[in-house]
Image (tube, rainbow, N blue to C red; front, side, top):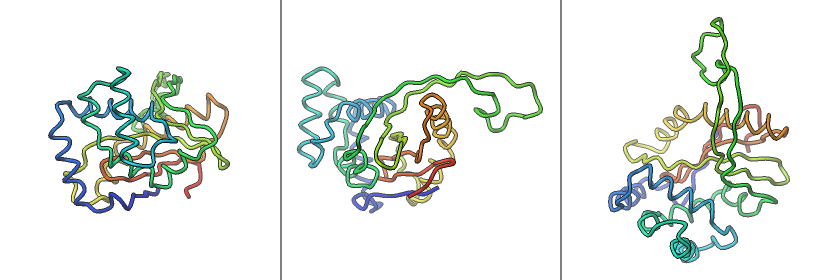
Length: 211
């Protein structure tokens, strides 16, 4: 597993700015996360070079009634801009194909979904459903990317925050990878998450290559 943090947000003091933005928002943490996912879903990737371009797109989505004014005001545009300065963000912008917000459902054995399941116990089938934020396709193959908007300011260092993210989401990301490979009949070369709060891509690939 690897993590790649944006130099723009590598300074841990940036977290104070993010915290201030979150505190000013009237939305809950879940609502802010939903809003940012909507923004990233509808974002024109060719117009993501500057803060001003991102802000214009957010305002346009309000005008189209795709998001509310409160949702738009909750956005940390600097964090989004920082994402596109990272290696994974650049791959997304330059990709041959980008598929966003792709729902799936897949039946899996119980012990694959719940790692602590007693393998000697009776096996059942569990229906796994989810929505994959982004599938990126380029010359290297498929990359599965999941956005995370967890507030991580309580952790003393980015490394501590990343350790927590791995604990929370490794099973989810690997289930998503399994689903894509089984449904699409194609190998996922990289699978991971991007944490906007600290500007980090955390590689959680299983059976793939980390670059």
